[in-house]
Image (cartoon, rainbow, N blue to C red; front, top):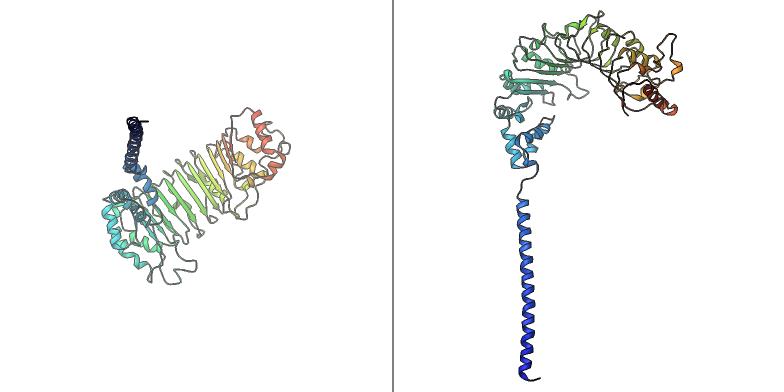
Length: 445
């Protein structure tokens, strides 16, 4: 090959190599452009706010409010440290500062009052391990909030933090609840809607509950009475009332404790043996919900109550109470408007299984129920075989106690009695109920 031909070959090879390198360069540049676009996209995404920070402020306030209003005041500070937006929302929203613990120092209370911006206040007064004299440590904070009595929306006074070996009386110390009541009795609370005092150890008057001093009061809860307490008449027109009786003298008038006209929900618990009640002497025209939890004498109270609009009845028996067949017998027409029924033994130690007569009395007394909730393990006779229950002349369709619940739509059992499972009694009753042509039933175990 001559020299000219050799040169031309080398030029061709170089041109081919140049073409390949150009293609590689174009490929690299395309890859660079793609990578740059990806980086830009990722950068824009990383700058977006988190999902919760995309929420409207009103929804974020609602979510945070669920956590701020807990028994732990420090929770608000913890949430404010999460991010700048949360901090700003918490600092600028009055509802986060409306709950005031009187045990706070004066500076903290004044900060809450300033940031609540005139919102109604929820006052919390709890016992704490102060240095003697204990209650006097509350006075600075109490004086500050008492000056804003017109803004009080709720009051919670509880001495539950006392240690089990501490007895204020033995130390010559006035009980916390009486100490607080004595200092606020003369005040007026035009916006007060809810009061909880537990335990109430005082023997004086609760003047601040009167219509004149607390005209807007709707909810009252008094727990663990240890002495006779007197509520002035007329008391505020309450809608809900919860009373836990610890001990009383024999001459206590139950009627003086219970305003009846506007009450829609009543909850009773504790020692009621000393009550002196006449049948049908307590008329509740607006009562819709009645709860009785470990009451020592159920029958006299049920005899006394007349509640034509009662829709819900919740009952937890006491080991000191009569049997259900005694407590509820003879009420075939008194509670026919009850639509929701709940029986529970929660916390009632020593209560034996409910017998056949108990099941029949309950089903007769609440024949109009739609929704029933029971501790299933306590009712071995609820689905007793049909042949053992029929009485001469009885309705042939009423073969089981629960056949009396002709309007039943839902039935909830917390546990099932082993007797039902071994004999298939629950299934037998369901088949029998379907044969009666009753409406479909929602059963939950």
